[in-house]
Amino acid sequence: MNPIVSFPNNSSSPGLATRTNYRTMVVDGIEVFYREAGPTDAPTLLLLHGFPTSSHMFRDLIPQLADNYHVIAPDYPGFGQSAMPERSEFTYTFENYTQVIDKLLAQLGVNRYALYVMDYGAPVGFRLAAKNPEKVTALIVQNGNAYNEGIEQFWDPIKAYWRTGGSTEREAIRWLTSIKATQWQYTNGVKDLSLVSPDTWTLDQARLDRPGNAEIQLDLFYDYRTNIPLYPQWQAYFREHKPPTLVLWGKNDAIFVAAGAAPYQRDLPHAQVHLLDTGHFALETHNEEIANLMRDFLSGHIK
Image 1: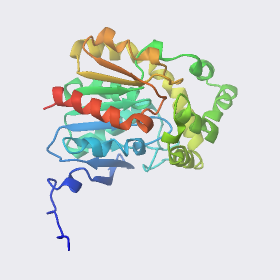
Image 2 (image 1 turned 180 degrees about the vertical axis):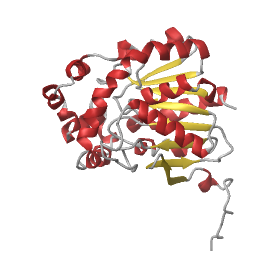
Image 3 (image 1 turned 180 degrees about the horizontal axis):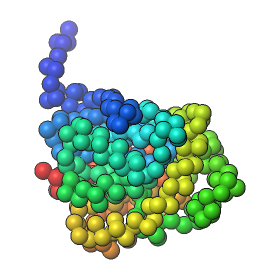
């Protein structure tokens, strides 16, 4: 008979060291959901998700990092498991998301952190970094844009909406909240579709289909225009504070195109840039490779 092996209830146990906890914190009256793993006395890594997903996109990455890092991955209001206040009660903007995440970190007692930013996570994370440069220990950028080169044809109808703010232009991009668009985001540019779980777009679409959520997303598409004028400010932050930076980019991404990756080295000459042969949601196909690159990078810069 094989002996029964039990582990004490502490973070040194192999399984518990990387176990993810699912928590909720009330921030300014809004329930904000977040995933948390790893020892709380370890360096913190903040993972910021994109559209139309949530912290669920980090489900496989978190256990790869939680043995050495305190990992926090929140859902923005209106996304994932966080509350979805009415638009009359909460204005859905990237600036307000930045304030929510900043206050969440303060309530958690997190004063320094490395940032993983993807898609919408980039404007939230870069606003945070420019506001609190002393708190940011490193940047990991995955298909997250801070340069004009990263925005091409996909954005043309959204730019038309930016110019007018009109109902015609708003309706013209409503299809971006459809199941067709959501599935496309996960599969476009992917060489082996069998690597992408259908659960990804199915789960995201279930949240997009909640009554009122499409209007929230259309508000955010319109507010994205406020990020573009901040690019020079973020680039100045890069040059002045020189955060250690790792850029990971699905090179087949049609949303934030690969041309947006190399410009980081203009302002951060020591940034590491890796182009991966995949699409927008690179973690779905290259999770292990990304985790290994992150571990090597973080071990050299975060103590």
